Every structure is written in C-alpha cells, then in structure tokens.
Length: 87
Image 1 (cartoon, helix red, strand yellow):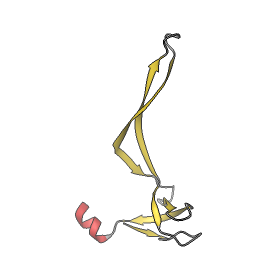
Image 2 (cartoon, helix red, strand yellow):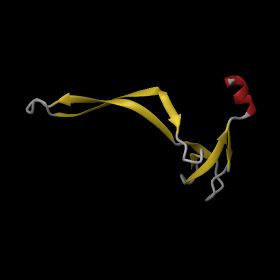
Image 3 (cartoon, rainbow, N blue to C red):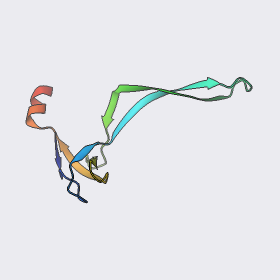
C-alpha cells in the first residue's frame, strides 16, 4: 500500500502503522454475593477476522509515526503488487 502524505508532518518519520478497529467479546461473570449482577471477567475474545482500518468521512486513514508517535491523516491506496495479488 501507499500513503499520501507518506511521512510524518512533524519529524518526517515513517509510519509505524494504521489505526484499526477490532471487535471482540468481553467475558462477564455473575458476582457470587449479588445474583443477577455481572462484572467483567478480564478476558476478551478478539475477532481478528472482523478487523478493519478506520477511515474518516473523506476516506483518509490515520497513521502513527514510528519515531515521534504523532498521528496524521493520509490517503491509502494499494500498491500495484498488492492489488495484483488481491485481485
């Protein structure tokens, strides 16, 4: 994939990654001393197959800089090699 702009506007660093959204199932348990009352158990099943890159209303993704951790918006397009493999 390619990004525009491709580098961090603050320090010119490379992107570390894209901001993603991942769904999951947070386990709950019923409290022993309060029937019908639940609390989080502390474990979540992550549904990796439902993960997707978040886009804003203009279709831009958010990148995070590998160096300074600043975030910026960019247009993401598949590179020709990736498009050939996917398509």
